[in-house]
Length: 254
View 1 (cartoon, rainbow, N blue to C red):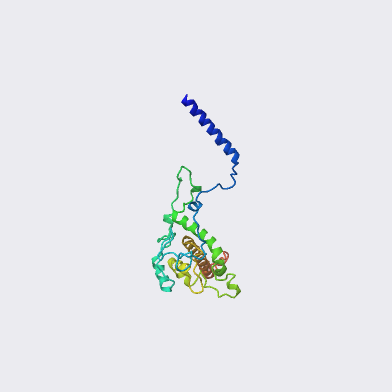
View 2: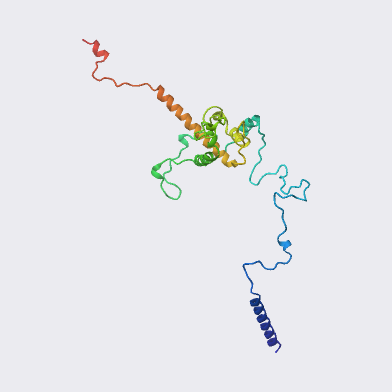
């Protein structure tokens, strides 16, 4: 008997709840009533608003000295030529190898992993060479956006900025740039030098190495062009011999 009364009471309560829910007519597109909303959404100041908390009155504070961004490594250099030379000795290009790739290092694979034969037995390119080539391609894209305006498409220093009265930069394919080490070029890209502004804020660290590798490819192409021109100039012209003309031995015979 008591169980039946309990069920009846619960059924009545459920009916009341359903009727109340229908009478309230909740609009789900609008926020519901909140209790102590400050605990859920604490009031925050705008980054550039005046602050009453800090003594300097700024909301956006400078990072603590020595702070390093996540994923970045510190560079203990300053914007001086001496440190640029030191960087050339200490910093190593992560995409280049100390020893050049020779023909003996190129391996011909009769069968690639997975049982697939190689394309006509062509020599496979080593991994570090592929990484370097990919880096040069990325560097070409960055160079066309951030460097070509001053240095020109071929690195000759004939960019649009230089053609409009700004002092042209030295060519990248010859002179001092070709003799500098990769670490020294990285320092110049990071801290700037002379009329060149630092590019650390515009180009990330990995992309800076990519730009350097692309500049090296421009330098290599320019050097090969000079060598080919010199070889073409020094190559002697060989005149075809006249097969019908008698030789000196034949002329001396009776």
